[in-house]
Length: 418
Image 1 (cartoon, one colour):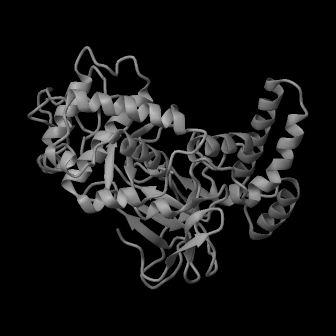
Image 2: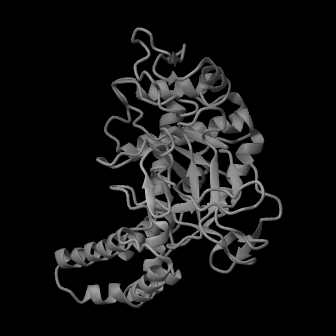
Image 3: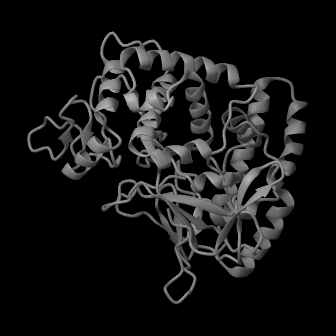
């Protein structure tokens, strides 16, 4: 975990809990955090007829999804033959950490037919993966497990019943099929109550590592990861920083998260990320935040768009209300696609759009307009001499934008998630 010295400081904010604020003026493109996960686990179905296309340790895309194929470079778990790895190093590291003998046995028994999870939703299968990974963390790294427990997240009144029910079901299932190692039982680190607390922390703090970008299909998460410092960033619907990850990049630490500034901010300003693509409508954003994070957003953008929502409620019929959301998205899309050519044109366009749509300049300047992307643009890091970069990088598709042009080559296959 690396937080550039003296750039950010942790503080308590009223109504928002812990937060990260700028300890000094920050420039667009500055890297303010590079964080490694303390826990990572697959987001794909536990019960699957075929091997998954990602390494089960570093989660890079496997060049050969089927390790049995002739000439395949993938390596398979010697205990279960169901988990594939991209290299001997990943296989060796996994067997001593993320994919320990107990993890392998527990996953195998949950997966084997007839599986007790076969009639459960995908969410329950992924929760089972998380709990097994979390309890394994208590065995292989007590310090990281305590760090996980220190993160914010408790079942709230609206979700407590569901979380408790899921925790009790999965706790009984795991304990009956694969007894926890003695180390967990001796330290009393295996209970339904602790499982419920862990599930709540996972829901509030897990970041998705996304599948490769495609212009023709919706991306899903390939894995989920818990980042101890990145979990301190609060949400804003018009963020001033965004996350970059390069899961399919060559080399080590490919699951690290990099936080870069989108634009300049003064000292004392809270640094916020958006927990989802910024093009979502007001009603969609509020619904997601309430269901997944347990709060209602009151950022500047939401305060403006709440008035639009009030007008929306006066329209009879759900279809018409949804139409309002679609119109809102079209306004954002139009803002991102209409790019002025000169400085004076930009100023005139900004003044006009701010009168019609108060936050249009953000979408014009910092939203990628590539088909099916809706990623956020941030400058590349400043040069060694401190000179700011005039090249913008999309944190979803990896495209580069310079002089109002979009480079379609991206970053040679780097998968970047927003």
